[in-house]
Image 1 (tube, rainbow, N blue to C red):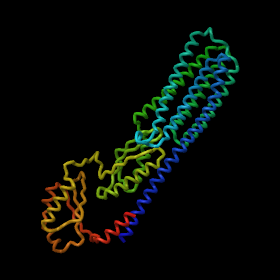
Image 2: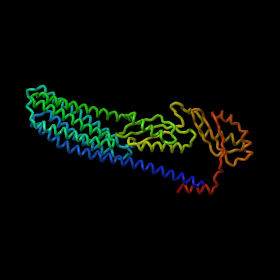
Image 3: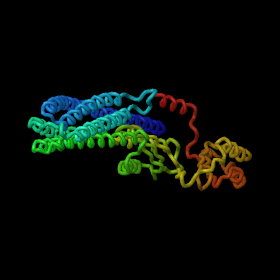
Length: 420
């Protein structure tokens, strides 16, 4: 029977190890999928933006369209941002190391910050050039119809690119790729403004072409500010939103053995997050059971697409509401006091369980299974009230072991089995 219990515990550890291995494999697969999607979408964007950028700038110069040239510079900025995304994607995929214990996911956030700064600079440059053109209306030449053709082609191409990139980014839940997709949508919107400005200029309102260029510049700068500000917030350990945090709390509460959750904190690491949480468990269970519950809760969190790591603290009570005094006796002091009190009646004990609770200090004393009737009689002579007063204990519970201590051969056999 004892061997069966040991076997069950051994198999339980194997099952738990397999569970953790499966979690790591799932996390690795998600990361690999994200890297592959980033690579495919970014190379698609690079190829398209290279063609469009060349067409916009060349045709813009020959067709005398400042708006189309501005949009071409915008496409050039897109190319730079695509290469930044590729670099960040490669760096963020690196495994945790001695210098980056939590991995390299924040490379994506840094890339978003750089992308935001780049877009702001490009947008301000566009506004400056458009302002110069508006102040010299007499120098604005007539815009050729070829500029409109290119603007429409760019508009359709950028909208198609946006839909393709957003669908792929949302599938792998990558904030960096989603940001890049919406960047493509802003390109489509700016191309629409450019087309309207070119049409107006061709109709005789030449002022509309530089105005369209200025609007594009403002849109680019505003998008850069949005990306940069969000990245800056993430770099300052911004938490997940309330909806995501509520989902994580639900996962923890669904873990068997968890009574409550408090001090749940999150901080973003790129698209992922690190989670710290305190779980409330039965205060009278063993340390190993509490640890098992915590590991089970952690495993539930790691199954989430958003969690890269989690630290679970086990509490017998909510220490925010009911803190435990630090002046209570240690195990060494409690063991010595109980041993002195019982040995006076020639009684020993097998084990002590100490419970440090806000309601008071409690002691469970496990007495030997082979306790004689004479020793039981002497047990009544122990002054437990004095012992409680000495230790500051609220309660001392006595229990008798149902099974005697293992014999030497049984201990050796159990040790051999554990070694296996």
